[in-house]
View (tube, one colour):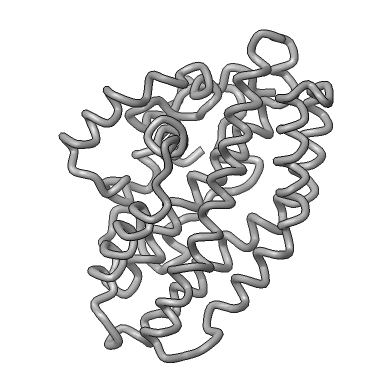
Length: 263
């Protein structure tokens, strides 16, 4: 368990679907990456948030039934994961990948990653639809059913999350095309502005922060927000849906913690 605190004895969110190590990019934990790997590093961080998120759902979806009062909040928590995954991949296809193609001058350089999106799309849609039905009372919540749905798509999705990092790793051959570190910073800021919703500060940002373990391989400060601004955001917004975040593997400061309903 990488950097998980030693007092966490039950299964934690670094499995069953494996986190992505920065060693995939050829770096050691804590080592500064080259500018042309800036977007790859960002994706490693985001993808690991997604993996921890679905792992925390997977490990708790059955046992949470022991507390019927907790099920509605768990459904909300699990639903946010699907919402963020959809936004992430839509953003890549609409803005990030086309910009990469324009910069490197190679049409279709990211197409294999888009094709992979379609490989798990049906399973993810089933996941979202089932949770919506359970939330609306159209279906009774069944943790075993949810777990089986995750099993139906997650191995393919996990492979995609790794393969996309390998695609971005090869950008060393395009290192002269642009200032990749600046482009990454500017692109993230632009994407955040374009995709910001009314729920962003009270749903999406808290979710990813509660699924980002700051000690994991010491990859640097994240999200890329000034510390004072980040402190204010947490103070203002993170308390609204606190019952949802009880199922997350980290506290609001990114410290690993026990999963209350882990198997």
